[in-house]
Length: 169
Image (tube, rainbow, N blue to C red; front, top):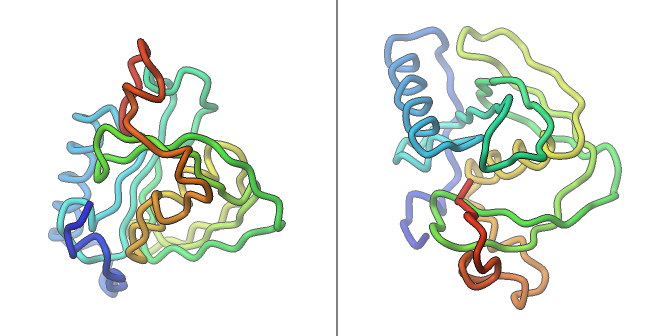
């Protein structure tokens, strides 16, 4: 947090299925896997492109989370399908050691392309919707603390959740 690269809008991907794009995705997958993460955006590793990856089947950090398919999403567009929101705790690899209660739309439609340029169009809710919104925020220079309504619900993970092994997303 504080790195200017995380506060800018990322550039669209104009060329698909390139060695450079595949190398970026491999780096992102390795980083996400090493951190037991469920999502990662290219700006988080210093690459100013509209690329996010996410997915989880079973993760000890999120034992109650429903499965989210492993997805590569380029140039995403999110459309809320309702004005209904819900708050839940979020963390981030770019804001280590902290958590905050963040409002997110309950139901969204997201569209974009995979690494080969094939169209993706999904309507999702719950944890899946939260992960997509969190990761796509990174593409617009938004970190989750900027979305917190009540800063009394933001702090160090070990203080907010003493005795729990709460990790960053």
